[in-house]
Image: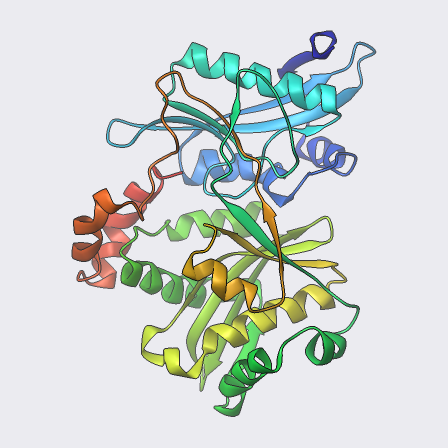
Length: 345
């Protein structure tokens, strides 16, 4: 029974936490200890980093939690906000104990919603499943040549060649954070969505330096597409990306995704993750053209008031605000967007 385990705060060093992750099925880059510093220092949120300890003293599982609360959007306890995964990992008993302890904490704090963004199936009362999202993954061969010749459809190869023929080039490196942010923040404005702060990505670069990849697609030195991805445990996920709307016909975003897959192979990784999306959405269709596999995300939730999800910027109730946001200058949205986006987990 899970009651045999004790759930307690993690008191050890960052390396101790990260060393544990290598033992647990379902652990992802979203579980890395560096996110604690990012959530606290860059976004100002309260964190709870817990472990489940076996009767003999061995740690059998871990759970990172972050509380995101505001008067405007609500009060949420999430593992992990702004990311796709982060739910409890470890032995089945440990994961169940951690999930139940999270529900107790959510009830004690009086939050509107607890959400555990699991990637591995878990049943733990009183939490209920909300499988509204999926992630899209492509297995990778050992070489880029094999991927190009045997892993992509001819239509996709043609779309990747288009920006190549225009002279676009792929670059990656930590020093590309600024051009990445310029492209990404403009894309977010065009979508009508508040952007996360540059400080958020600077904190990722500082605290998750071994895992993060910044990449740009440039034409004569001008970045036309850019992405930020993270890798751990044999997989690279492109988590944030953007592309110039004015150059959409030249498909710089296709070269960006190809560049990220090449980078994953260069790093010796086994899978490329296109990130989460809503089933049958336009984003989902874009990802499926690459010959991918869908993996439904078995997220767990608890809400005393029955709230189905955190605020969704794509919700119809925000339609007017989205239309207005798209008309604002990028410089303005980059100033007023981050204080809003940090509250939209």
